[in-house]
Length: 495
Image 1 (cartoon, rainbow, N blue to C red):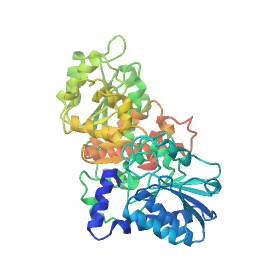
Image 2 (cartoon, one colour; image 1 turned 30 degrees about the vertical axis):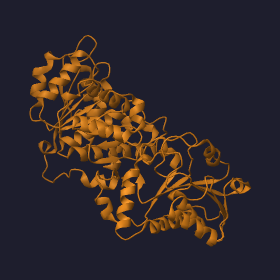
Image 3 (cartoon, helix red, strand yellow; image 1 turned 120 degrees about the vertical axis):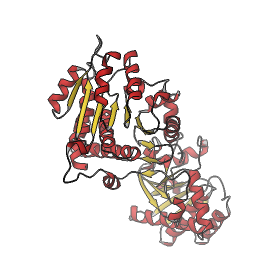
Image 4 (cartoon, rainbow, N blue to C red; image 1 turned 90 degrees about the horizontal axis):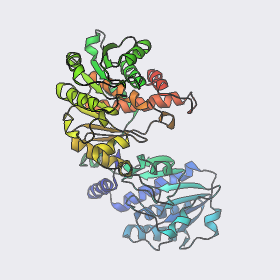
């Protein structure tokens, strides 16, 4: 589960009210941190804890006492003074009784330590680090760096990172992974992420409103995928209509249509410019084609294609609009026509989204998946891409609330939400950052929707399959060489 800092507070309140005190949770956290350090660096013997004045610092005092007892040379550096909470003060007093030295200024021990453990600021941190903290958190050659709960300087809510944020080799987070830790730039500061239990009961998570976000796993997603019965036929596996591509961007609909067929739908009809359809037939001859009239630049005309598309819409189980379609007055009007005339689930991607800028009221409520990258999401929301990236989960939720659609906010740490539920995909790699990758995702998403999956689950499944296929391709191809078409080929390894 992935929780916000506020949700984490609710979980701890629930746990305290149901028999496991805050002091016991701190003890669990500190002991788990010490156990991780012992297993992560068994040959080390000198460790310094950077302890703040809150409960995050208290976790460090508990861990310091445990390592002192194990025979390590330990120091706690508390640059902002004594702990301010009662349970942290008790933890500090216990550590001192165990012989742990506590200092308020950095000395030679900080430079010579094998391990630096950061517990200066916890998950509630916002804004910028105080200047005096930055040199303490700075990297030093040869030292292992472990963050307690969250790297200081990072936001557990948004994933932002202050100047000087602690760069960890590993982060031991307590109770649940914090949502901001799945997003960049904070994600790159966390290093290896280890979540340890502190006694929070399952019922506490069940009681959260809104519910905790989900970290997607391939194992769970594969259980959601439509099964193919032994007596299946092509009409029972879903018929997808794809309206995408143009003379100039014919490859977009080739990738989307091919990915859709490789993801299991029984039938697919693609409506596009004639040159794009020729390319599709060469790549994937199983796809049926509807040639659309185009203008002198190769983009779809509007009214001239209405009759063809009305006929093509009959009996379809899902509709994909947008990949490589271009944004003109005609394509905007044609998108509006398709949205009004269809009655099946709709996936809007790329130029299908761009055609709706300023007109999100056109989006059919309750039966649409939107797959924007941050720039497209920003245009739909009337904000900047930087504002979207500053708090991706909040931006995705806001767009879902405004459109009553399932949102797939693409990028590293893709966020999926229907406005209530939320999931984050941690799979994927930088080799997927190529033109055409989004077209592949759109095709997979539309295929699963055409096969009858619930739209939120279809979006979660498509994102996971797409990212895992990207990882499979990257496992055998250089990042620089890898192309989106390699992800389509790799789908056979993850389905």
